[in-house]
Image (cartoon, rainbow, N blue to C red; front, side):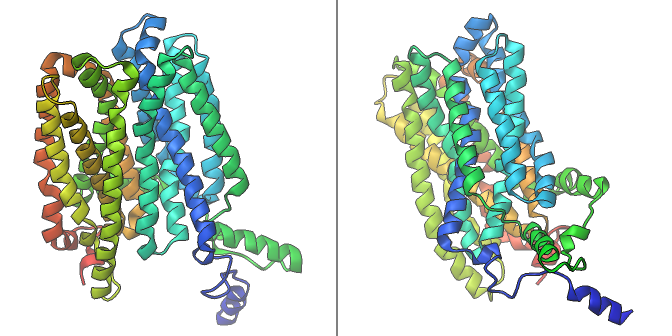
Length: 476
């Protein structure tokens, strides 16, 4: 039996040592950066599509004779698709690798994007928008895994930083471009046509430039190549003999995310990230009310405050880059062990800045206050949003390394579900409560969540040590 095992493992295909060039961790930095950029552009196309439609919601409502709240469901349906899609694409990426489970659904999303553009009734708009979200969610949930293939934990923070900027870049830039398109002679349909053209172009570029990065699939391809070249059918890779059942996959991507959401770490951080993510989509409806209706700005000019969010996001990026140095020092001090709490200082600052930005926005929105005040508030909101979103993602991955895919899926499902609630409610909420109290309400919610990163910075390791899914990681 022992001899048989030795003979069997002799034909097991693995990487040829730690320096094997086929191992994605050993790819050149240029190749890794190129792959990161391409995945980021794919992700940005999906998030761009989620936001640009909202700028034409009034025109959609007028054309199809429905209320603006019904037309705004086009954004909600897409976000629901964002939440459901990862439940399929994430397990497929662990079976078939990263490249094709991203690109095939993405090409389908392109088709549905053009379908929205040629829709002749509101039902078609809503159905196609859902499927755009469902299929374009593939890069949203798979990119994190692809970056984990390429970068070691010390480098991964910066790589995830670029990914996070792609996630938030779409909803921030799209309203500015969408307002210009809708206000021109092109109309709302061209928000979809231009988005579809961009997504198609990026998908074609990705199909040419992306190389499979999932190590088990790379080894399976290597085993097939060896069998063909040598004529020896005994060569095999472990991945070829892995046949996951429906029950095990359902447990990992349906049951386990729910189980993780029952833990204080996953629930509170996913909740905080979901709240700030929802504010981004709420702003798509709130900023026109604040700057167009309250201050009388033109539609295009009223969309420019979204650029203030970008200023805040850039500042948040700088803080995250600075914190990477702090994180590496903490990791080194811990003997190269993980130190999730060192991810939290930007989030601790961001929670305070976000709350302050919302209070300033609420109480300076009226035109009797200088226009610069709400613009500064928007920049503060951008800073708070990005630092909270990024740190929460890193903290979840660091705390649940063996269940990172499930933790990310739980986060994606909760944030998309929560964000889908706001588009049809924003106008009604602001009209009934007024700009001041509608925004103050959000500020008080943000204030209630401010202690979360502070609590876990000081007590996170102790809390994690008691958790079923994280105790073996922090017990030491």
